[in-house]
Structures are given as structure tokens and as C-alpha cells.
Length: 203
Image 1 (cartoon, one colour):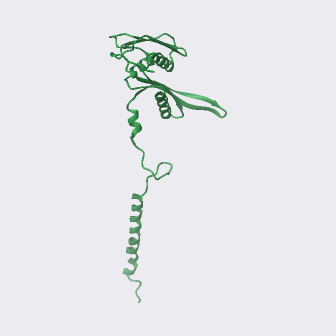
Image 2 (cartoon, one colour; image 1 turned 90 degrees about the vertical axis):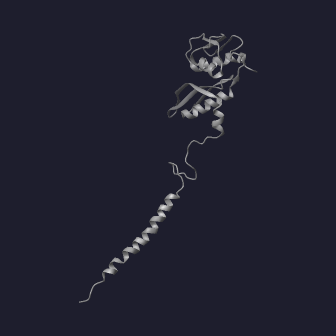
Image 3 (tube, one colour; image 1 turned 90 degrees about the horizontal axis):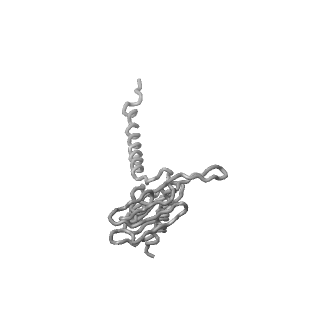
């Protein structure tokens, strides 16, 4: 009776398939290791985003900033209402330089960046005395806000609302600020304080 195919010939293809699959698996592993970075949209050719640092961060660190108001505003368009964010902040170096900026954008971070650029553009330099005070009484009106600032030696900084923020970031001390109006708008109060300080600013 003739014998069938030997057992060795039935098991012979197994090592060949394993040998064929081994390089393929190693090639796939190598391809996954060398795969370039891609973001969520599938775009490649870059590196992951992170803390980049650089000259822009160094330039920002010389000024202190404080938000005095952020709100969502709406504009009625043909297709409905379009929402944006409005941010107002005070920027100063606590050595006599101070400015108020207002920015509006679809994102809060962009609005803050716009407000920072506007504050730097409209910054003033105040002439301070040896006690970090001002030399005379100043008063100004902006829209419905009226602010009066008087030097008061030995009393420290006496102010409220956003006027205090402006004086703190300007580095002014030993003054008393008074709001002579009923306006509660922090942006108008801050701008009125800036207009009052222009009288003692360095031209």
C-alpha cells in the first residue's frame, strides 16, 4: 500500500510563512518608529507644540498686567448673532509707565493679546517724586467717569475700582484717588485715571 505524503513535507511550509512574516513585522515596527509627527488635522512636517519661549516671552515679562474686564459681546448679522469677546487690561512696569488697552476677538486669548498691544501703544510715562508720588492735584473726565487724584504723603495708596489698578501698575504711592461720578464702568474709570495722569506725564 503506497504511503501518503510524508509528515515532514506537510510541516515544511510553516517555517517559510513565519520567515516571510518576520521581516514584514519588523518593517512595520520600523515604519511606526520613523513616522513623522502629525497633528489632529493630519498635517505633518512639524514638531509638537509646547512652551516655545523666545524673545516674545522675554518682552512680555518686563510689564505686569491685570485684567479689569472681560465680557462676551454679540453683533446682529443677517444670518443671526455673531459672538466675540472683549477684554480690557492695564499694563505697567511699576516704575512710571502705564497704559490701558481694549481688544476684541473671537477667542479670549486673542482678545487679551490685542488688548496688550493696544496698551503698549498708548502707554504714558509719569514723572514721580522721590516718595513715588505725584507733584500736584490732577483731575480728568472720560465719558461719564470723573477722577481726581491728590498727593497725600505718608498715607500710602488710597483708591478703589480700576483706578487703584492703574496706580499700582504705574508704581504710584502716597496718593488719594476719588471717583467724583456715579459711573461703575471699570474701563472708563481706568481711562479717566490715565487722562488725569497725563498732566504729570513726561512729554
